Amino acid sequence: RKEVEQDPGPFNVPEGATVAFNCTYSNSASQSFFWYRQDCRKEPKLLMSVYSSGNEDGRFTAQLNRASQYISLLIRDSKLSDSATYLCVSDQTGANNLFFGTGTRLTVIP
Amino acid sequence: DTAVSQTPKYLVTQMGNDKSIKCEQNLGHDTMYWYKQDSKKFLKIMFSYNNKELIINETVPNRFSPKSPDKAHLNLHINSLELGDSAVYFCASSQGAVDYGYTFGSGTRLTVV
Image 1: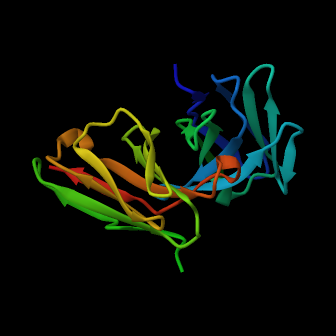
Image 2: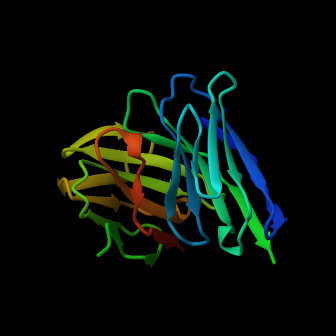
């Protein structure tokens, strides 16, 4: 079983739509969680950290459900520039190591 | 003024050759990593170095050897390249614990022919 699992998509949504991604993590002791964004043929870039209380950054909202071991990302008012692959990430307890999901591909359509 | 820089960006080489990929970070981070992203886009940790000490060594073939002359550099040397080594290799760095995530380099696309 992979440490982090997410639906690969693709998600094709019209501009202005709201889209949500979920992922699950296997290690209940994981403490740090992130969403990364990866554009085609580019490196992953940190989008936002995910905190237990949930957090928001503009049009993006991240939530963590420890009981169910899942993480979510909500994107409101989608823009064409949001088209990318979104990677769900959790840490490995006791090590400076992050596990990445395989990513969910989002395409925002005009 | 790139924070994490890798060279080369592209590398095409024949099976059996030995090659190196260089990585440098100017963020003052104390931990550096190498990740491999395969054709299915799965990012997998290969190595990490903290203050010049290897602290993680995943089950990668011993043909792969990380070399860190100082905490700002972590190079990856690969011996006897195989077709299955074709992938994108990303260098990354972080400060201390991973609470703040990683900063990645732009990647090296390795193609073994």
